[in-house]
Length: 133
Image (cartoon, rainbow, N blue to C red; front, side, top):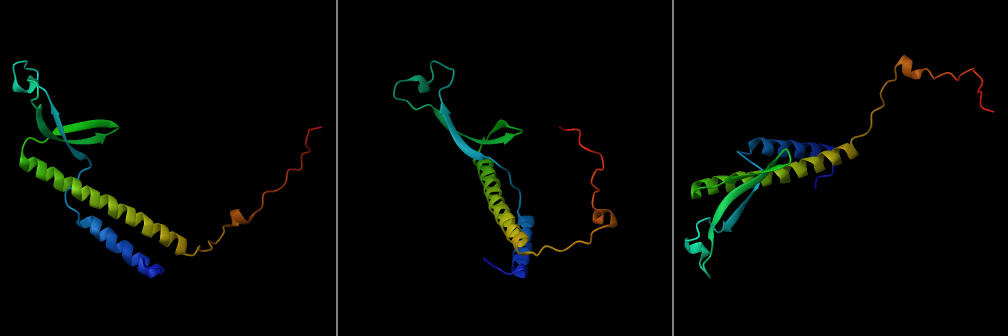
């Protein structure tokens, strides 16, 4: 990990560029669901027979609500897998970006700011006597 301020700023610029180069991305995970259908005469209801599936779905949250999208064919599955993988890369780069910025903030010296005339004035102590007895 670079330790000089200039090296950290360079690393931050590289990470920002990498984030800018990411393609399509989306949060979520791909899961398979299996189950039995509603037709009592279907093979899935026979003893020892597996249910239907796995049916792949992309699941993610929007405003705290879970959304589940069906992935009907292999092309849709591959597309979703690529987008989720790019999102994972984005998450990793974001963590690195925040870490580098934290290091920059710790290394960058605090600059003395000129105080305004109003800030220089000290508040005057009240001349009123306290009524507490």
